[in-house]
Length: 106
Image (cartoon, rainbow, N blue to C red):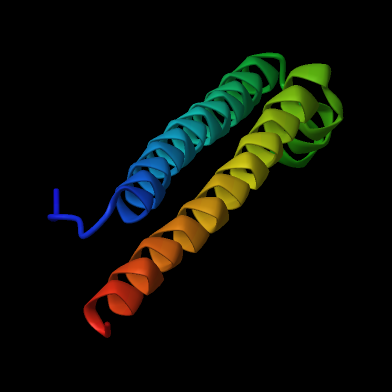
C-alpha cells in the first residue's frame, strides 16, 4: 500500500481498493454463471444425443430453457455490476492521485 499525504487521499484509495475487490467478486460470480451455462448446454447436448435428437435441435431446446436463460441473465447482471464497481474504483483511484498531486504541488 502506498504512503499517503493526507487522510482524504487515504480514504479515496481505500474506497477504490474495496470497490475493486467487489468488482472482482462480481466477475467471479459472472464466470460461475457462464460455466453453469456451458455445463448445462453440454449436458443437454449429451441427453439429446442419447435420445437421437440432432445437435441443432438440442441447441434450440437449450437456448429456450429456463436454466439457460437464468444463467445468461446472471452472467449479464454480474458483468454489469462488475463494470459499475470497476468504474467507481477508477474514479476513486483518480481522486486519490489528484489529491496527491494537489498536495505535492503546494
